[in-house]
Amino acid sequence: MDGFLGRLRARVFFGVLWLKFQKPLLVLITLTFISVCTHQCARRPFPGHTRHGGFAAKKSARERLIPAPGFFLDWRKRFLEVAKPLDGDGLVRGIFLGEDEFIPETIRESFKEAGLYHLLAASGFNCWIVAQGFIWLARLWLAALWFRLPSTVALTARKYTAPVAAFFGAWCFFFWSDQSPPIQRAAVMVTTKCVLQAMGIQASFSRLLFVHYLGFLLFFPRLWSNASFQLTFGCLFGMIAVQVLTEPLRERLGATRSHPVRRFFFESCRASFGAALGALPTTWFVFGEVNFTGVLTNFVAIPLTSMFLMPAALCAMLTVPVSETAAGFFLQIAVFFAKALARLLEFFQSSGISLRYED
Image 1 (cartoon, helix red, strand yellow):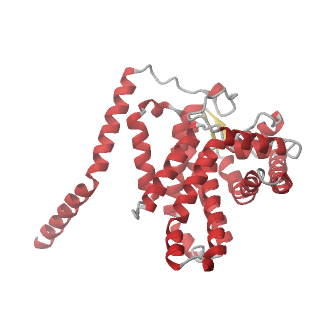
Image 2: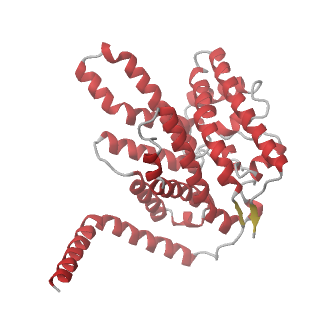
């Protein structure tokens, strides 16, 4: 009996302690629930499946959230001009910046059937990749200057290199792109993470993601019925869930101590699998279909684009103001991997494999 009472007191103690530290989060959940319920009760019933307005719907002209400075507009225009003769199918421009108007309809259909249509729209994932690319470039620059800097300056620069580089990378991509809602949300999340990191505050990505999800719904409850919003966070939550479930496998394979390229490849595969799984509920409910094909094809497509195509396109974007020759060289590398991806999808389509189910 005493043992039972002791365990009960311990559970009550830890329960009260959990509520004490989670009180702000519980308040945020409550306020978000009230906001969403109030908005949902005041609006018309959910329209149901929107197959004709799904991912394949033609994009309408979107006004930029923040007018991009003329420098960024000229920068983007110059990149597109250099890429035009090299990127005949428009895949590099479509995958990197979301400029998919030059992509042939046959390639669009192959991407759609393979569950990879999301690659043809500049997404929040691209924003994170560019931010990570800026971090790598900043670290290379710091390593080159490390022995020339005073020790205090070098240590301070080492502390702030990653958050500052990620911040500039995210917002550079924000102004290069069409500022779609997923990119807006990614830029806000990168900024929040950079500020907390610079202040020395350690916050898990899952908690940060959950707080952003609740915060957006609190101030913009209409996003509850927005497919793009739910897909974005569904993919991210799926990535986190797969990351937690596969952590023992990661340690067993030695990915934590492996070469950075091998580690990045493992993380890309894990992220692509989680994102594909996380998107399934929203695609079924909103678009009336479930495409399990994307779970398989993303294993190849996401590492290919994130490790090779996107870095090459980013290097082309960064070098185009200085040298169009260098930009053309990096664009040729990006086009090579874009064509490899297209050939892979053609082979997949010719094989007749399809795991796409419509309701």
